[in-house]
Length: 402
Ligand code: CMP
Ligand code: MG
Image (cartoon, rainbow, N blue to C red; front, top):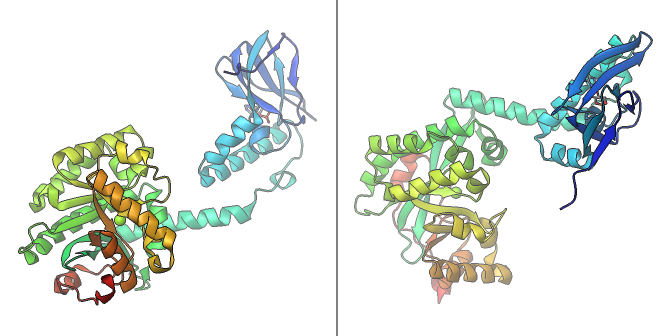
C-alpha cells in the first residue's frame, strides 16, 4: 500500500503565500499553523490550526489562488490531501451541495478581502456559473412542488393489472404513484417526478401515504377478486424507505389494520436497497421473514449485478421493460429473456415481464415461458374504480404462439 504523503515544516517556515496557486490541502498531524492575510492593512492573523484540522482546501475547491498565507508556528508534520483526492470527492457530492460550497467560499474570500483592507468584491472573483445552477434549482423547485402536492393530496395510487401469460387472467396489480396537479388539473408524468422523489427525503412521507392508501384499496380489490385467493398487490419500495428505522413497524401496522396477509403483498425493490446501507438490507430480510413476497424490479439494468441475486432475499425477478421492448426484432433481447427464464428456474424464482406493448411481444414471452406479464397491451395504471370494473380475462389473439 502506498505510504501517506507527508510534509514537515520547521517553526517559522512559510507553508504557502497568499495568492499562490493551490496544489494540495493539508491535515495537521501535529504542530500549529498560523493562517494570516497580507493586505493594505498589513499583517492580519485569521486563525491557528492544530492537530486534526484541515486547511488549504479552498483553492482546490474553487480553483482560485490561496485565499490566505500559512506559516508553521511550531515544527509541524502535515498530511497531504491531493487535488485529485479532493476533486474526486467533490464530484461525488450532490450538485446543490457543490454549488453551495462554492458560494460559501466566495463569501469567505470577500470577507478576507475586507479584513485585509483590499477593495475585493464578489464581482472581482471568478463568477459562480449560473447555467449549471439553473438546472439544479429547477430540481429543488420540483421537490418543493412535490411537497406541496403531497400536502394538497394530489398524489394517489393507480393500479396496473398483471396477467398470467398462459390463461390471460388478471392475477394481481402493481400500485404506481400518480400525481394530478390541483392548480392545473393536469397529470404530471412520472418521468418528471419519480427520479426526484427517489433521490430526496420526500419519498418517506409520500411512500407512507401510498402504502396506507393502497393497502386500504387492496381490501376492496381482494373482495372483488375473492374467487382468486392468490390475487396480489405489488408495491414499489425504495432503498430510502427501507432505511427508515420505523419502516417495517409502519408497514406491519398498515397491513394489520387492513387485514391483508403478507404473502399477498409483493415488495418491488431494486439493488439500491443494498447501496443504501446495511440497515435497509436488514429491514428487507425482516419483511421476507414476515412472509412478504420480494421482487427484484428493473432486473438487468442499472447496477443490478448477479451478486444481488444471492445477497437480496428474493421470490421473483422482474424483467426490465428495455428487454421486452421490440422483442420480435431484437434477437439479442430474446436471448437475454431466455437466459433469465433459465436462471429463474434454477434459482426457484418466479418471473414477470413488464412493459408489454404488443401481441408479438406477448407471444414470444409466452413461448419462452415467462409466467406473468403487465404492460400497455392490456392496460396502463388506472384508478381503483376503473380497476374494479376491468375484465378479469383478457382476450388476445394467440395464433402466433405455436
Ligand atoms: P486556501 O485558500 O487553499 O489557502 C488558505 C487557507 O486558509 C484556506 O484555503 C483555508 O483553509 C484557510 N482560511 C482562509 N480564510 C480563512 C478564514 N477567514 N478563517 C479560517 N481559515 C481560513
Ligand atoms: Mg415496479
